Image 1 (cartoon, rainbow, N blue to C red):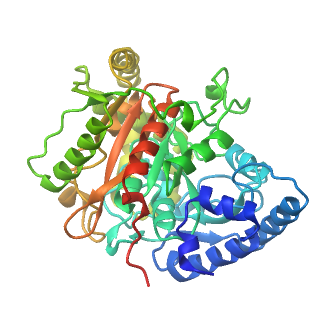
Image 2 (cartoon, one colour):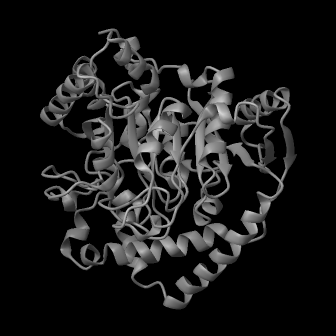
Length: 464
């Protein structure tokens, strides 16, 4: 099979399946081979689900021949970050302390994708415990540091590192990731792919490892915004097993409804003094939007300690989620000393600090929501630098990075990161589009429009 097929979008692969020129089994076998050749070398893979994948692919082909097509992703192979319960298979949470953990049920997102006919092909690498205690090195994972397909001496980003690398390297059609503070958007930007973080409560987290019950979110990572929309339509929706999803609106997406929408864009202020390459790429993106006739204005976030409040909430809730581990000798099996120390420190967060952070959060949510009375979408660079060196401390390298994860995750807002260019040394840069709560359709449509007029998302890393 041609390598070109592996880098097509899921939507394009599905079109070939409908035409009868590509089968799910053919595509699954090709991706399994790519995972063995490239995915393993990048440390992006925890385990291949080979027998399950081929069984699901054969079933998908039989159903398609019989005229039964379950969804637009019927027969499409995907990978899942290894914190989703998968019946009878190890789910390690990226942690040396959980290498033998097996659940007897599937996470809701795994169930929904299976029912839609998608093919689970691999469990993908992640930072141990999704970085719940804070971590200093890229090797904070049971599988080691996940390498970036664009330059293996660089990091794929955390904590959904394997998902980002696997999509970028053409080893899965799409992947599932999770975000509490940057864990979808960062690897999407570093790896040059499209990553969608839905609104808090949009997607059920039942069967997913909990880091922060009030901030965790699950979303797709793919090669296009169109693909992310297709995945979200399948995995979104109410689930009685996750109370945060109850009463939430269903997600339906039609790009045609937004093609001529007069978007009002709010440009978040950004200090580009140490990031001329990101500035140039972002200004070109802004110019593209101006040419489309969209109105753009600079907006400023309300004056709240977003990052400090988010940090207290994640630290306290993470310590509660992992309390049994923290109080056990197994804590010392984790790979990153900073992670161990951070988890221990979480047990000492006073209740008064946590409650103060939650009060700040509720006020901040109202203040941020007011911004969207004047604009439809907030835009900014996802990050200001390319992927970091894989072997150095983040205390040394994570400087002048920018980022919008604190306020947007604290407020539970949806966001999408799409490729917007490259640094001079060939590393991807990302453009972030942030919407009001439950307005994923707006950011997906704007991202799809951007991708219809650029080819950054079509670029491929220099693989063998």
